[in-house]
Amino acid sequence: MNSGMAADGPGSDEWETPDWLFRALDTEFGFTLDPCATKENAKCKLHFTKTFSGLDCMWGHGSRAFINPPYSEIGAWVYKALDAQPQIAVMLLPVRTDNNWFEAIQQNAQIRFYRKRIKFLENGKEMGSPRFPSMLAIIRPE
Image 1 (cartoon, rainbow, N blue to C red):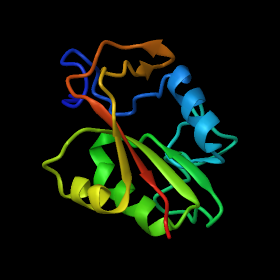
Image 2 (image 1 turned 180 degrees about the vertical axis):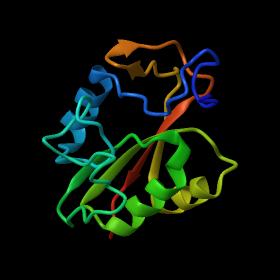
Image 3 (image 1 turned 90 degrees about the horizontal axis):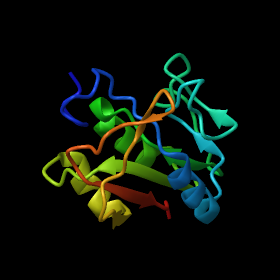
Image 4 (image 1 turned 90 degrees about the vertical axis):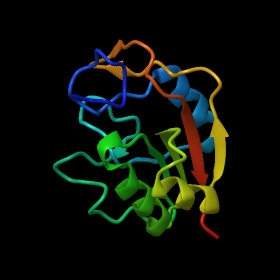
């Protein structure tokens, strides 16, 4: 059971970013890479999937990555984004200030908190509100 999203949600932790939110972020950041996508929900032309995992691949120093990771692997994606040295990495994450990965984000990224809960999608359909707020972590390596 996916304990991170709505209590009645399915067992998957692969929640699609709403188009309105991605478009707004893409306008601001100009993304070139979606390293944790599926073939069906990829937000960028250049994307990686479970088969060709963004955790195992080189992202390229000039990439502008949008990352909405599977919530069962947030720590791995945070550390990959910090190590991959993209031009910019924007991560859509749950607010979980008690996790070690949050400390790494807090020390290395600009954080924006969302006041309202984001209704994610599953198979293109809007789901109910999650049980947690969301945030953006904007990583700009020096």
